[in-house]
Image 1 (tube, rainbow, N blue to C red):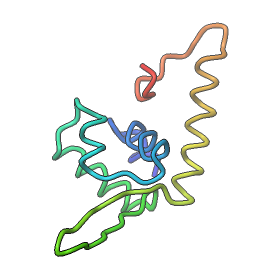
Image 2: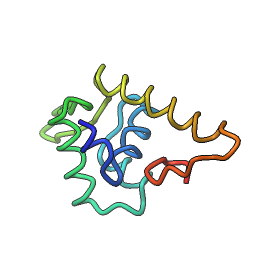
Image 3: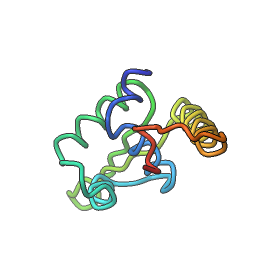
Image 4: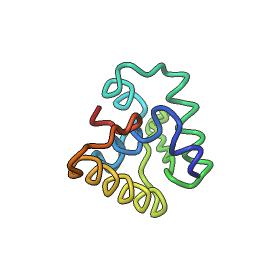
Length: 103
């Protein structure tokens, strides 16, 4: 799990899904305009495989809509990420976190 969460874009994806509660692929692409669709798709598959996110497929009138949400495990990881972000920001000598969405 740590290997996946530490990969480029994974923490940002988790952050975005957490903010929206449920978000579709298209909205993720628009929100994260510097990530390619291929890389986003790969990261989403990896995060789903690790049990950090859940993929929902809803079919309406022959059109499939896909959305993603954090699992309980993903929520726990998000809390840890928030705690790390707070540590990075409150220390007298801030720690530069290269994977933190705030940079």
